[in-house]
Length: 270
Image (spheres, rainbow, N blue to C red):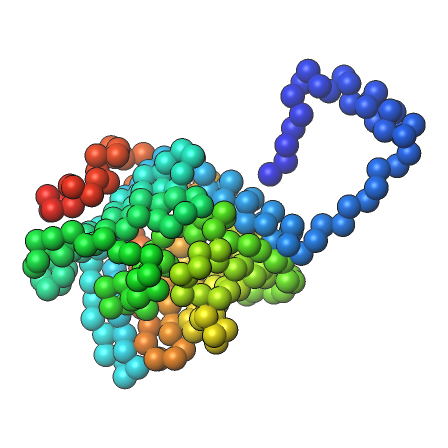
């Protein structure tokens, strides 16, 4: 993003430039790969801020190695929180064996998110502990930690290179989770240079083996600013299984507040 200096400073800029010249040319600073990787991540986050809240629907398709599949219908609500991570709620509507299951996330910037899963068959709310975040979310190839917003502060970064990605040019950066209990050692992220949209993420497990690949497609822009992928596909290279998330019915500026994301309210969700 281009920062335009406030008007009251404009008249002083030539004087400041002259003083800088008397002191000699400033020392050139070459951006390190770590600084560039962090800058790209921060710029991408800044572009996605300010949406307030949204609701959406999701079709989750689970496929095994033989190609057999099961389909689930999910309702999603997301609330932006100033100064902290976002709040998210996933409610399963179909099929009958998962109907009423709800997953609630209270995101945080620097510490592990708070996550709860409501299981209607047991009529109880289960807290997902940090040690279980690498486990499968509802039998999918997405782990619990994948379902949270990937906050900038919870990774360290390193820019690697630019390369073509389809008709676009992408930056490729490496990010390393700072959470000791993360199921990943590192991730490779492809983002297009113009809009900073994520097109692919490769996940490496704690032994540094290439575990999964996430690809994102069918981006659409909302409110003239916010890009959302319409299709996300996670492939597990060890098991041959995959999960496809198809997003529809995005609605921004809905009537949501903190009361819609309370842990005690999970049992009352319909």
